[in-house]
Length: 329
View 1 (cartoon, rainbow, N blue to C red):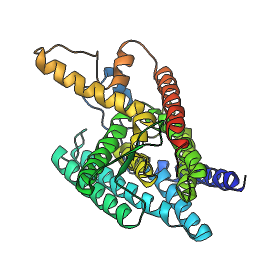
View 2: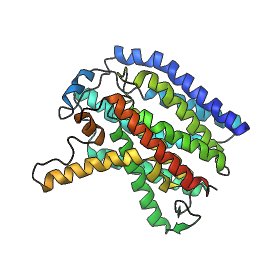
View 3: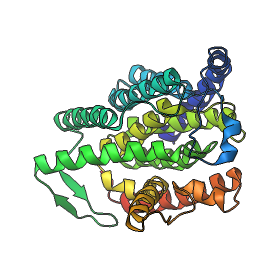
View 4: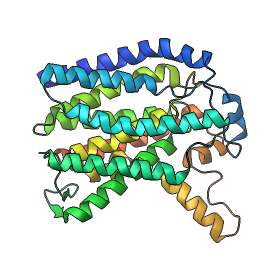
């Protein structure tokens, strides 16, 4: 019960701080004309969103830092700060991308190779840090069993780095509708918070996940449809770093298959669309990719898509907790 109260307090602090920071930061972004540019090849009706303040992810980044720092002082546990630092590096990459878009006044930021190399470097450094601080082992826990697959360290390091980069970009790709990325990540953070209670010596990671849940709930005050602010790549890449960072901090990377079901579907839809388009010389498998745009084309409202995708995320997270909660250690 005491652990649950601590997590509840972290969530409340994250919510309150993000809501307050939104009142201060969003008007400042608007005054600075930090407005989003909408892709020309995106849905035509999204052009009405042009100029909406972006880089609003700064609000929950700062709030989650406060939660991690407070936990470090309160419990003398610096694990959450380490995961925050990892996520923050991706947030900085996102900030550079957003800044480049604003400078060029179009939806084109850092080049794909530059982003990939920066993200890969961050992933490798975090994996090395987890290994040498004892939070990581090269054993992949098999879902719904107590079995694990032992990998040689070099193989595991390559696997980890690629999974992290893939996860971060999948979360980024999901951020395409008002409140979508924030909403589908809420149950993910609940799952990681619950694992913090059931896993030995991992309470700090769970507390930070609870805090980030509160932060995202606070951000949704401004990000739900019609959005008053977008999180931008600053926020979505930070969020992707938080999701995969927590999965690896728990030493449960395969849980991403379950809790990241929406991220995976969004990414696969993009890949399938490109491959099918090239293979058929111009035909499209989906009406538009990624997946949320396909359903927009079918006539679904943004609110309906966000609700259905969040429900699917909840189901995936329940399965993820069942798959790994019983073998948490």
